[in-house]
Length: 230
Image 1 (cartoon, rainbow, N blue to C red):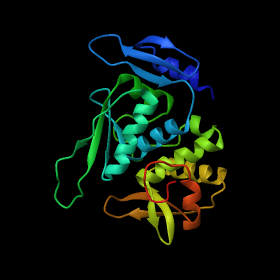
Image 2 (cartoon, rainbow, N blue to C red; image 1 turned 60 degrees about the horizontal axis):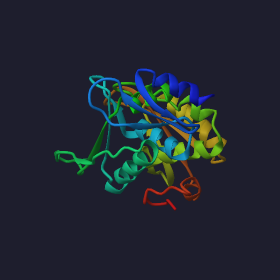
Image 3 (tube, rainbow, N blue to C red; image 1 turned 135 degrees about the vertical axis):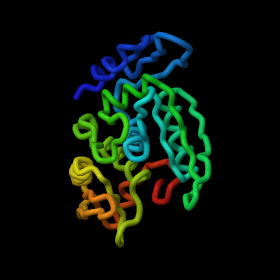
Image 4 (cartoon, one colour; image 1 turned 60 degrees about the vertical axis):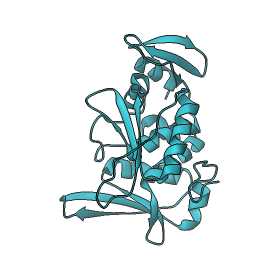
């Protein structure tokens, strides 16, 4: 799938200031805004960025803002660095007001129509509540193995963790569950799947698990500072 055509289409409501073979620089047509670099090609960093948003991010309905909230300070700092590397934009990390029986967490608000449109129109991230409807974007499904691996790294950093006697994740989205099984198979990591009824919400949830020996292989080259990352 040609990402360049989709990206250019997603940015048609913004002013394109310059264009190269690898990226375009855009700015909002009206009001004060900052220049944003939008990639025209897929990369490992972009794959991780998209999957971290799918894991713990949110595209607001009320305005063109993306937010991500994480309880791991190193991980959100890593996310901030990825944003700068991809988009040449500096976004602030803000502490979330303490809540009863919850760990301290931090969030990054991303006020950018350009990035919002990229996520929604190119990478198919739903606007608003998304836990039951997220999926692996078509661009990732048809990409090279290195980008599929990077996408899975982002998913594991946000949604994954130790599960049973290995590593895995759970999701409310049947489509994401099915898509991830294919990606793991594509990169040569055998997984087992399961599903169960969450009685409190009367909804089905879906899980994946793989042997712990495969975790360092999956996370090789990940620079977040997380356990298992190189």
